Length: 158
Image (cartoon, rainbow, N blue to C red; front, side, top):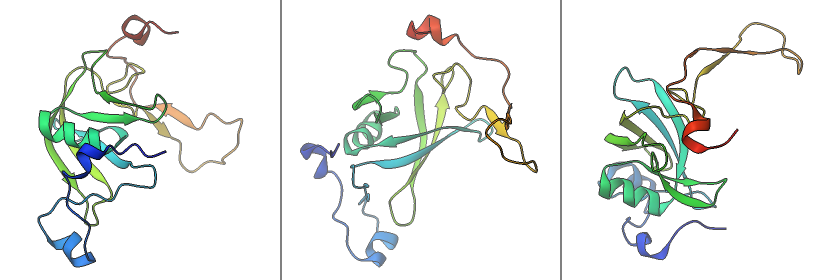
């Protein structure tokens, strides 16, 4: 199931040699077999990691065109603009691609919260280090203890 659409394929360059990919000024993303590119998103204020998501060619093109973050939802099978429902949009400050053009790093001005669970960041829990790993051990602690919003109010779900 490819999430690539034909109209955006022509927006990106053809992938050439390793040197061309790593040294040229041509954007030629290497989407995975499902047509997706992983994207780590950080906050411009302080650099905290806010979330991890995927972009397909449409999402990447719309992000570039609008200056607002768009992603491909694997669970819903659709394109989505971050904040379309909650109002918690991400205004792109910087969008970078790695050396072999198969991963993105985006710095954003986050309006409201990034996480649909109500926390500022999707990375709101820390993994306990140095202990024994077992299914019954908690293993996680909350690095963020306050939610920015109530997801039940915004999304109408329990």
